[in-house]
Image (cartoon, rainbow, N blue to C red; front, side, top):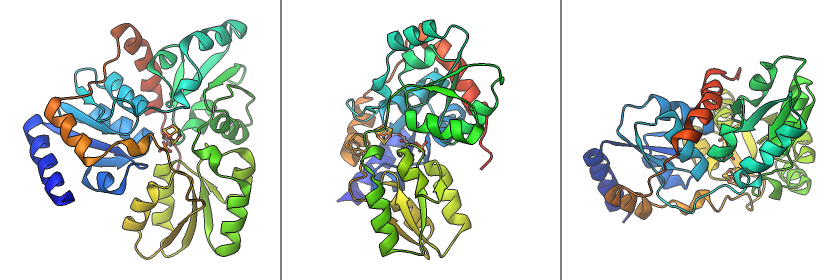
Length: 305
Ligand code: 13P
Ligand code: SF4
């Protein structure tokens, strides 16, 4: 059944001159058929460099918007219109403008998990892979506002020793991971390395061994072949971790760490997307020009890991 659908996708892809990008949290079969999989930074770079006419973005809306801003001449399709990110909607442009008014000399760093309007109000964008490097690159005497993820902001503050003004947003999936989950997984697999995403809350991060973006988790696992790992992030990444490292073992810290929005994309929806050229993600030029300035800095400041 899947094989037929995949063949149909390949055919449509060739007809449309399309490339398929998939985030590491996508369902396994979608990661397998994608031309590129990766974390938010890796996919943004792919989107800005591809010479395909059409990008089918298997992820959530802010990722497709980012691709559309970085490659304005391309057609960017999101196979499911309602695939959004609750964290991205936790701050809007009006709220950010108010915060900037209260802190007139501050610089704004916004996590890529944000709307295009919020990016347009920001000086720098970052992902979880380069938040530390982006914050580090800013002048020491500058006050920094970090939106919308308080947990990634906290992580960047700790790593850089900078004091950040944090917006109280959070990922509704990562906050489901509890310290009890980490403790009981460690009891079960005492020799395993705990890899956690910086979007987890602080007590969970304190109990973990490595704090990494999803792309960095894949690199770390590749460097530590044959080991056992407890994974404290959205469970979709375990598919690719296992595929790339058959000699290692990976255990989800909890079965609850599932992002329902990431799982809205399916093979059928990719087919309709390519057939109907839907859903086109467009960002108005007045917003996109400003947002691109912040995003260009994000793709220039590369992580050390
Ligand atoms: P990364 O893949 O960039 O680590 O992002 C995690 C995430 O929550 C994306 O929505
Ligand atoms: Fe948003 Fe969290 Fe889902 Fe990522 S995992 S898309 S941050 S809700």
